[in-house]
Image 1 (cartoon, rainbow, N blue to C red):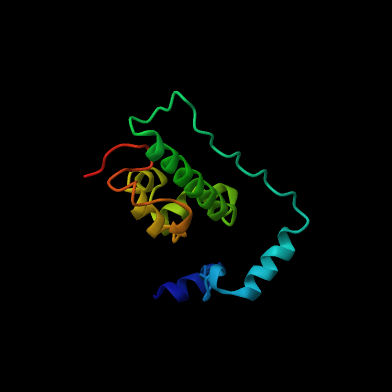
Image 2 (image 1 turned 120 degrees about the vertical axis):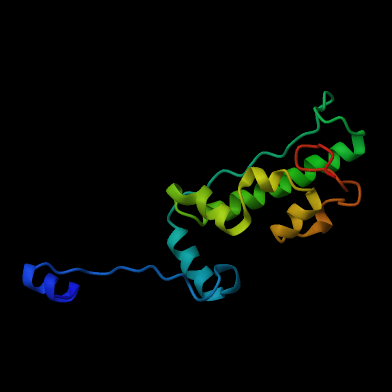
Length: 142
């Protein structure tokens, strides 16, 4: 007796549910962005992250100009990560970010230039030449 016949004989019915991913990426579709914006129009906006100020007791063991560039790059990276995570459901933010870009801590351990490339950030706003071989935390990367 096949599984189909057994299910019919027992009176049980089954429904298969499958999730489909969108065919078009939200970042590439003007119409999907408009729909999302309409849905989010009634919701209060999340507060913007406060700019990171360079403190005289900078925790980085770097020259002052490099430390300022690193803090500027970190602010840009953090803003982009926050923007990306706002699109994900609250309960699955970290797991969906990990699927798309890698674990957040792994991304932050990468060289700053590689982070900008992975997140597709505009490098004109940060001086990446000074940040060669330095990760998000100001540590040397080999």
